[in-house]
Image (cartoon, rainbow, N blue to C red; front, side):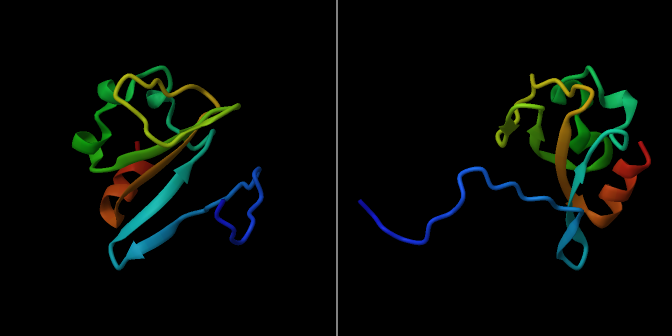
Length: 96
């Protein structure tokens, strides 16, 4: 058994947004900020990388966090999505 610093098993990290570099950032998007146009559609249908240049890193539902979202995952009302992209791309996403 490896010993080391313990960490809480129910830890929650809340991010408002942060820059990874001068022109690249990560932003969580919660209702009501998530545009209604996203709700009920799969990631493949939305194709956000092609549409506005952002990648969906994770989807948090009421009961779980999906850190490996796939194309057939559906965005539901109340979900929290974490997206990454260049500053200009994040701004395009905000305007959806």
